[in-house]
Length: 251
Image: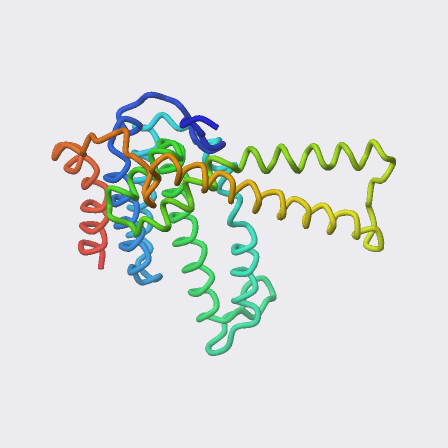
């Protein structure tokens, strides 16, 4: 339960983007996403420009394009929802391959697909270049309420412990010849979840009391006091500034 805790989406490439302070990357991705969301869906050239910017950032970060695209499939449920909009939408309709499609539905589907894809790719790039610990540290430096960052920190530190508890409980259940696979056998699973919750709650109480006895006041000590250099802010500002320029120029 040390301080490393690199999440599965992190790629240790050691590039310049990786070395940027986490708070500047968080702000850059947030502002880029805001620009994308505010862009009208009919400005197709602007979305092409945003995509080109992400391609450049991907190359600079050394993130493999195939790795990025595979993990972007997380948005598939939203894409499937978007595909239904032209069929069930109202208003003016057009004929395409024997199908009657709603114009408003087509615009809505494109809006979901384009903005959702760009947002997911930008978030994946942030995750691929920043460890979970640094993400939490960056949020703390950006003055996110301490209660949120502390909860996320404890969750990160004890997620592996909970997963290991769940694994041992499953092995114990299997060793006793019980492997529920059907709905009417769900009782064992429900009992296991309840036991895991009680164990986690009791462990949390013990850990909290131990921390208080050692001087915990509601905020963990910050071991890394380095602040982002103005040069890092300038480098990170390139992405949102160029995206804003594209939005204005192609409006």
